Image (tube, rainbow, N blue to C red; front, side, top):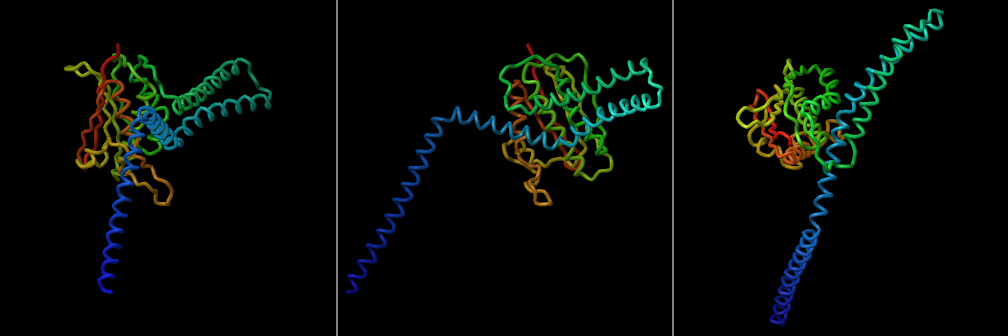
Length: 295
């Protein structure tokens, strides 16, 4: 009887082992099959995934810049309002002057054009369509457009911005809006770095010039934050790597998505360029972008 029970237990044990082994093999087979299917579809799927990532990064950037954009719109709106109120007061008091109106009304149109330009720029910037054709453009223009969205935030947060943009730079061949996104992302990171540093004096510098030895156009963005350690620098251009908290202190989604610098590096590569980071803990960081001149 005991031998029979032992035999039954041995059989059960081997059946369990065999069943487990079969399950593992079957799972691996399905995994391998799915991988093969993904590989067959990878060119289209990978392109779609990259586009989705880039769109996510764009909308995240716009969300973070919304306060600054509102400030930029508010300024010309207030100017227009003051001019209109002045004209109305003159009419009510019987001292309306057509000559003064001829001077005031064009200024209202000018301020409205500024607002229309900002809104149109945001529309293009947030467009789902990725630029497939390259254009010749001035990198200084891309920098100025980036500051049209983030400049107000810099001023409101007490950050001193030093610009040294060399005039007459060789033109760049590539995606002008994409390069603006690169500049915006690095400036946004620099802003966060100086704000979190706790330093009394907060400064960000940006300069452009032509490197004498290679004739490449160089963009340097420097901040006086706390710097970045070597282990972080080695991973900073990897997708989904971020040093920002995934959750804000109030429990809401935080700023960190880990896409900004990854997408920035891809845009720069599409220009045939390179991006480097030089950082010293306690001192600050410098991003250097090297771009070949356009045709």
